[in-house]
Length: 307
Image (cartoon, rainbow, N blue to C red; front, side, top):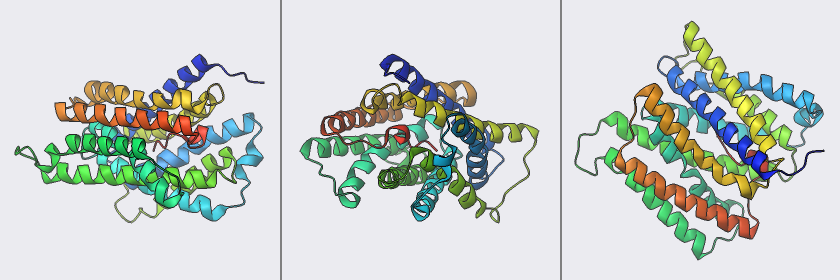
């Protein structure tokens, strides 16, 4: 029997975020020669190995493959795969810290979507946080849209739009997970997510898949393994602490993104990105605090919708 241990839960959560950060770094490096759809396939398909091994060791193999809602899983997979394609595409167009920071707008979008799709009640406090958070997003993206009068390439402007679309689809994916979690086991949601994403990614084969060189093979396999391991550690973190306790540590991803971007890709974030990210993170943390008081949260092991 596992007992609640908040310190261990926090440590595992930060470890999971670090594993996801390594996964993202592998994806960004692989994107230099491999299209986004192909990276989504390997990130999802290879991740099945550690996920299924974990399910077997935990005695949850039956729960992983049993489902009463295959259509719901397929829909969640399509949404998740789309989010990953967009996110991985953005990584090929913008610096890693910037894509990460824009991705933090997803919880703000989830709050808005929950009103219309789940019938949740959002009062003035959370609406205020959402508005402030979107102001932070504008601070980040305004220079990329030419708002400061500086030179901006069409690629950078397009990258911002792709990153925002990825955040929107991530938010939509959280909504689908909340719906699935009403009837489906957590392990089944994880398993079918990776299966459906793998199948959905195969649709992109006609759009320029390439045969990777040895180094790129290593990056693609690494993305899948680190992504799968991150999911395992993430789930274990929620077995040691309440979701409301460790969910805020999702935002440590920004620290890992800054370090990875700086040391591996020579990417230095601009002042608007840092300022906007701080505003968005503050708004997100406030929304988490309000959700904790109201008892509104996504299923614990799936709280983070990392690609």
